[in-house]
Length: 242
Image (cartoon, rainbow, N blue to C red; front, side, top):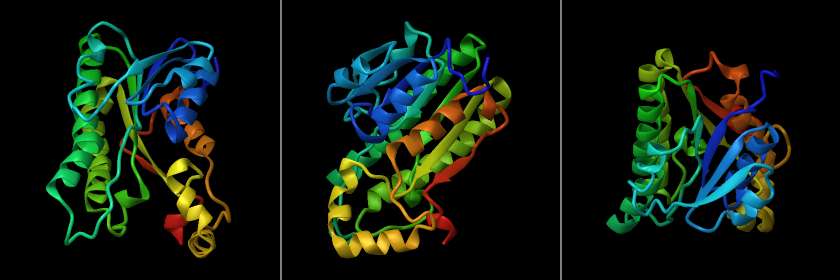
């Protein structure tokens, strides 16, 4: 079997209804996994594009919503992609916007991953976790204080969980996407000045595609990456090297 095959595995991808999450779900399916496509919005369209898949409703407005998923099903791969963002000057940022982002991006991620790992550890199964971090796991950004804090937190959690679980058969890594062509970046790409400034800093000379992240997620879920633990892998066209 190929070291990049996910045949016989079940992967749960959160936020799989669109964008990067949808691309990851499709790539997992192409690699042979049965894919559980989970999201606040319907993931039926994503699931319909995969040979072996199902859609699940999962709203992390309740950050504990994912903790019961693994009691009655065996999942081998967890991709924590779901996330939200709120924008405002740090001097004006509200507690409500802070809590909403931290609940989805960090608290839900931790407790969903905890439940996933408990099930795998109890059954002494190997498993993989792929967290979707951000360039703002390393940089400060502007006007997104809770998002920046949450993504720094995702990088930290990736490392501590790898420290605790690597020797017990659970691989935990993260991907830090760069500027990717998705609905979330449409306004940036439509602004000639911002688009030009972004492209000038990216050594690869182009915006990333959702598949650039998706195939990396497959790699971090497959046997090919078995000795990678606690990594936060930049998939950014060289942005952070600039």
